[in-house]
Length: 119
Image (cartoon, rainbow, N blue to C red; front, top):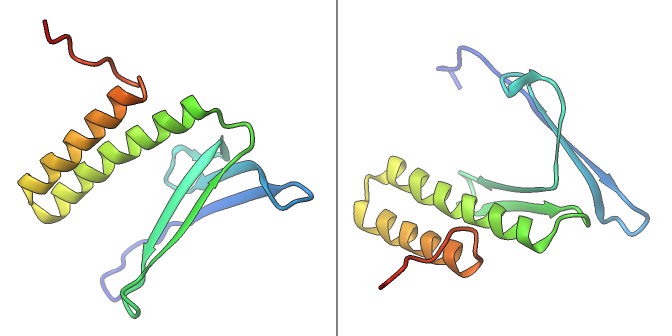
C-alpha cells in the first residue's frame, strides 16, 4: 500500500431481528454521495476478491420489507453495472455486450423496462 495517499472508511450497520434476519441496513461513507451522513437501504451485495486465496467472498443481504419488484430492479441495475465494470476493467467488448444483452433480457422479463415493439 505504498501508493496510498488517502484512506476512506465505509461503515455498514445491519439491524437483526430475533431470528437474525436483517430488518435494517444503514451505510455511511466519508466520501459518499451525502457526505458522512448515514443512509438506509433495503439490500446490499458485497463481493471481495481475496488476492491470497483467489476466491470471492460475498455478503448478500436484504430486509424483510424488500418487495420482489424492488429486488428485480436492484438486480437489473446491478447486472448493467457489472457489465459496464467488466468492460472498463478488461476492454472485452464481446463479453461485455453479451452481459448487457442479458441485463436487457432480465429487465424486459421482470418488466423493469418495456419489451421492444416488434411490429
